[in-house]
Image (cartoon, rainbow, N blue to C red):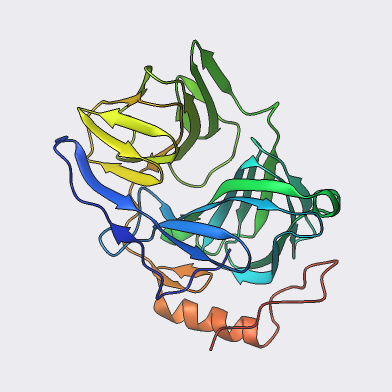
Amino acid sequence: MSWFPDQDPVLGDKRSCDALDLVIVPRARDIGGFEVRRALPHGKRQMVGPFIFFDQMGPVQFLAGQGMDVRPHPHIGLATVTYLFDGAIMHRDSEGNVEEIAPGAMNLMTAGSGIAHSERTPDLPRRTGQKAFGIQSWIALPADKEEIAPSFQHFGTDVLPVVKEAGLTARVIAGKAFGRTSPVGMVSDWFYAEVLLDAGLAAPLDPDYEERAIYVAEGEVEIAGDRFSAPAMLIFRPGDRITVKAISRARMMFLGGSALEGPRHIWWNFVSSRKERIEQAKEDWKSGRFGPVPGETEFIPLPE
C-alpha cells in the first residue's frame, strides 16, 4: 500500500473512560477500485508502539475479472504486516519472495535498507471473484535497525497460536498475548492479535506493553460504559488493565508495543528517523536503484 502525506484521518472525541486517551474514526477513501480506512498516522498520534501505519482494506466484493493491482513500489525503514480476514493477495518482492497471503496468515516483510514489492489478486479468485477484507500495517524500525537487510517471513494459520474459549477466539499474530507467544521474529518489542468476541462476552487487554490500542473492525463494543462502533481505533494510556465487552459480535485487532526513541519522517512509502535518508530513497527509486520484482514489468513512479 502507498501512503500520501496529505491523507489524514479524522479524530473522534475523548470519552469518559479514564484509561482511554484517543479515539480515531478513520476516514474512507478509494485507492483505485476498493475502499480503505486509515487510522494511523494521525495528526494527534503518529504511532502506537512502533505501529506507524494502519489501514483497513475493504470489505469489498470483487466481481469475476476484477481484483486488486498494486504495482511494484518501494519501502525503507519499516516492516509491512498484511493480515486478511477474507480473500487472497499475491505478494512478490525484489528479494525473490512469492507468497499467496491467505486469511489468518502472517506476512511480515522487513524493508530495512530497501525493498520493492507488488500486491495483486491471485489468478483464480480474479477469474471467479472474491470478497476482500483485511488490515495492512507498517511497523517502524528502531533507529539502529533501519538499515538492516530486507527479509520476508510467512506463517500460516496452522502455525500461529490460537486461544479458544466459549465465545472468544484470539489469534496471536506477533509478540505475546492471551498467554501465548507468536513464532514471528521481530527486531523490537510489539504485539498484534486478532480477537473475535461473541455478543455479551468480554476480553482483557493486559497492561504488559507500554502503548496499546484496540481497532474495532466489525461490530460494537463497550469499555467502561462507553460504546464504540466499527471502524474505530481506541488508544489507551499506559498501565491500566482494560476490559472490552462485545455488544454485537465483534472483530478486533489488539496492538501496541514499546514506544520508539523518537518520531519518524514519512513520505510516500518511506519511513526514517533521518530526513536526508528519505531524500536518498526518493532518488534511488527514481533512478532505478531498487532491485526489480521478478515477474513484474510495471512499477509505480515516484510521486511528483
